[in-house]
Length: 255
Image (cartoon, rainbow, N blue to C red; front, side, top):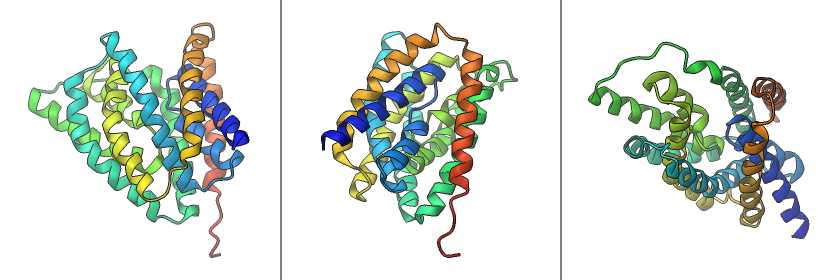
């Protein structure tokens, strides 16, 4: 039990540092580490990761909210659809054979790495002009995809939501991240609860993961100011791509 707590603590610490350094959710690091180090199944890694990220999401949302970097109305609209699709995503992940879920996660990691590289340039791309009704519909659609991926992949949903808010709706980076964090608290909670009911959450790992992520995020955020952001993004992107390719190569046991 003590050994598992220590492992979960440093895994959460590494995931939090990564998220704080490059602004990408800790789930893309936490899940591969839990599978490799703790030897748990892919399904349980996804469920446990999402459950832990809900608690850290609360901390992040409060922090961003205190700095005025949250669009509360947009978060509410996003959550309207995300809370439903997060449950669907969790159930879909549970229905997949382990090897298929690993391959899907590998593909998602590569997608996340590409977003990580492109992130600094998103705000410079062309932005659409939306009226109130069109903006509401767009937010609802973004919530559909973000909620589903959060539930299925065991991540916070910001990997999809933040770029969409910046690129499509012309949000600033900080407001997009704060809005995404607040939205994924209820949506992630629904997905996490669904994973819990399906037996995909290892409760004894949660204390270590949550404490580690909170501390790691604080450390990573401070280190980020002292390091060249561009180099960090490229290095981490290659690590994620390499990990994603390994997951994509998961063999089909039926063959």
